[in-house]
Every structure is written in C-alpha cells, then in structure tokens.
Length: 303
Length: 303
Image (cartoon, rainbow over all chains, first blue to last red; front, side, top):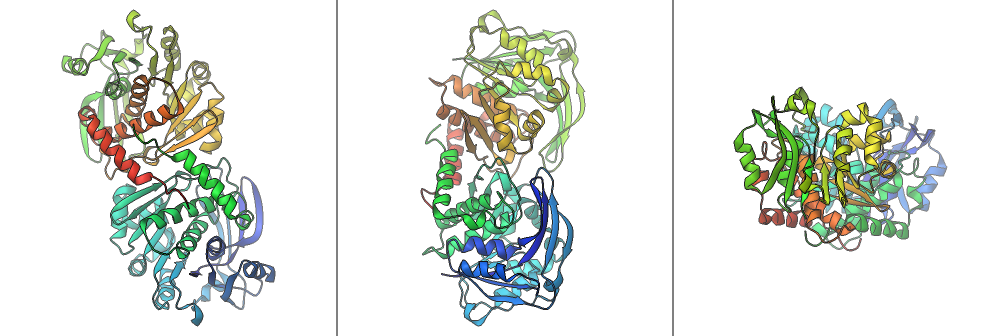
C-alpha cells in the first residue's frame, strides 16, 4: 500500500560540532518521505516557495515519491536555522522563517484520498486534523507533534489525537502532554487521550511502545558519532509507516518490526547532514545493522 | 565462592515525593551486601559508630552476611541527608556527616584475603586501592565511584582503575571521567584506563556494557513508580558480583546474566525506602521479572 505524508519541505541552516551547512534540504515531510519510500510508494503533501530548486523536486521523483501534493506557492520556502551543542540532544532554534508555510492549507489530492496509511508530520494540529479528515477510510494514521503545539494549542491537539492510531513523540513531549514525569506511568495516560498506540523516542536510549496495555522496549543502534540529529524523528516515523504499509496486517509484531526499521534508518540519517546518508540506504545496510542490534541486545534465555 | 564488599554502612535521612524518612539503614556496602547475599556468601568491610543499632547488625547476620570486617568505632555512624525531586534522577545532598568514616582505614580480615570476588564500593580511591591490594589473588574486582572522586582525586582514581576488572558507573560519571559526551565513543576510552569491562548504568534507560571490544545493551525493568532511588546502583553492583561469584566461569554470557540480575534486583530496591523491598526478594520474584523483561524486549527474528 502507499503512504501519504503531510508536513514541511524546507531549507535548513545548521551548525553542529561537525560542520556548518547553509540552506540544505530539510523538513519533516522530506525526511519522513525519503525514509518511507524505502519500503512503500510514498506521496507528499506540502508547500514550497518559488525559490525551491527543481533538483530537489527531481530527487523526490527519482525515488518514485509522488509530489503532486507539493504546492509551489508565491514566496519563499520555509527556512529553519538552528544549532546543536556537543551533547546533540537538543535543537536550538536561531530563526524560523515560515514564509509560504504561513498560508499552508493542505489539500489532499483526490487520487490520494483513498490512501490507508497517513503520516501527519509536525505541523499545527488544526491542519493535521483537516488533512486527516480528507481521507475516506484510513487504516493507520500516525502523528508527530512538538513542545510548541503541546503548549500553545493544547485543546486543538487533544481533538486531533482522538482521530489517530499511533502517536510518536519523544520523552520530553510525553511529559509535557501528560504532566507526568515517569515515562512508564505517563504512557497509559497519553493513550487514554485517543491514540491506540504510543511510541516514545528516546534518542540514544532507544524507544518504547505502549500498545494494548503492554510495553515493548527497543534499544538504539549504538553510534559513536552523530553528525547532525536533524530529521532523526521524521526518518524514524517515516520508516515506521512505510514498513507498516508493506505488511499484510497491523499487529503487535509488525509494529515491533517497524520500530526497529525506524531505529535503524534514523541511525543512518544522523550520521550525515540533510539526506546525505539516508538517501544511500539499501536493504543490505539495513539488514547488517539489524544483525548488529540483535547481537548487542539479545538477552540470555535464563538467569 | 564468597564476595567481599568494602564500602559505607550508614544512616540515610531521605525525602522523596513518596515520603520522608529519618535515619534509616543505608550505605553502599549495606545495599551491595544485601543484594550480593541473594546469590553468594557475602562479607562486609566497613565502619560504624557506637550508635549503630544491634538490630541492624543482627539483620546482616540473619542473612548470613559476615560482619567480622565491620569495625565499631568510637563516635557516630556516617549519616547522609538528601532529597530527590519529582524526576527522581538525581540525589541532592543536604548534609553529609562523615563521622567515623573520617578515620576509616579498611583492613581486610585475614580470613577474607583469599577471596576472589571483591566489590570496592564508592569511597576514596586511595582506600579502594589499599583494600584491593590486601587480597592475594582476586579473580574479579568490581569498582564503583562518583563525581566527587572523579573531580577531586582524578589521579588517584586512575591509579586504582589499573587494578580492577569491572568499572560500574553511570553515564554522567563516564562523561566526567573521559571528557567525552557520546557514551558509545567514551566507553572504549574508559576501558583504556584499566578496567577490562565497563558497565554504564542509565537508570530508567537500562544499562550498557563494553567488554572485549563489543557492546551489550540491556533494558531497564519498566517501573511506573519509584519510591526512593537510593541504593539502586549499589544493589545493581552487589547483585552483579554476587551472581558472578556463583558461576563457574567469568564469561561474556555470565556478565550479561549478572547485569540482568542487577537490573531486576535494583528495580525492587527503588520500590521502597532502605531495604524495605530489597530484603524481601526471592528467586520466584526475580524469575517473574526476568520473564517480563524477556517479554517486553525480545526482538523479532527478522525485519
């Protein structure tokens, strides 16, 4: 099945301990779409400005990513500038130029409305809801959000959460959303808000899922060097939904596999800037890291 | 085989979101010894004051913990006062009354000097070294330390690290010790300082071992409520060495099993104050949590 992804396609200007990059290709939909397309046909819904390079649009086309849902609007493309300090666990924003994003009113092209797998990237929860409601009978709707929306549009976000199946956020966002510090205690509370399944991204500490009243714990792929964490979360979520769209059924086991796919693919993303590494991934590389993860984290049969 | 543990036996006065306790039984050797004694005969080396209750000494005896190495000195028992805020991930010290610990010159009783399994709890690295050197032919020496010693007695600590086999510290301490933020990058650097094996405790995020050039990753037991984190690290290390002393050989697989034992036993410790829960653990309870951990964290065979 195909995946439809709504979110930003953007320019990023980024400084990390490993370099400074100006106006490189970024945005939630860019990372999620590139990751999803490893597994399934992918459609993007977004908006860019007239300054957006044709070469980038061609890149999507070459990956068989459908960009009919990317509107080219008058004005400039959304541009985020930020930096990471040496611990690399938090993005610091220098400047956010919303530009064409200000008037973004995402329309799902008619041909995508029958799509069953939908990823609502991190944008205004009102827009996420509007997009979601345009799908006729979605089978799996996955949503990402961030501290800004939790703080500023809490009620709207709660409305949107009622419509979705899987919420993927990080541990700090979970604490904000529920007001509870202990992740294990907080997870069922977040699920009570609507999503049937909750996946918490913990960066170097892996991920944890709460589904049908039970926890599943996942290690991170151990990386001695992160070049740029930008896009890690969207690569994770994109790979997750791309993987699920390829499966015959929605099940606990497939969710677990999809999370490992997300873990592995995001571990590649952060080893370079923009899509530098993400775009080079193939099945061999994924399976190699999966073998390593198995080796690192398989527990003994008895103690 | 038996385990010999050197460290503090103390009074703790503790405030957490779940209660306030005055002068309860605490100290690194207390937690480590109680945990180790689940698996192996255990000897303690420590010092207490004349105010130390006989009932507590009797508690150790009832657990078959040998206390011939606990000196009762003139003066008062070491007393730590502290609190935890709601995130529970850091102890804040209110007051440290070293008392009899000031003159602590740990002597290994003659009958323990042939011991093969030694845990050097968190005390001055000069004392740790002195204790270590009193053993004739130790097979496995495990050491814990803390930010204070890394900062204040760095050179002495480096000398002590050359004598040990396994270093067990937390991720912040690893960063301090190596000056490197990325844990995966830092672990081999710490091993280059002397210990053959390094185990990093990450609290709610589990643990990670570096041994023979390879990583092993372990989940935490998911707990929705921590009552008091005091003693978690020492319970972990005590269970680890107690478990190892019971095995026929020192091997990667046994290290992995011992870490899971430590994970489980420390998960009980933090569910109550002092030894309230730790002292009630039996094999059934351990195996029950082991089954749960397996269920939560067994990865699929393929993706």
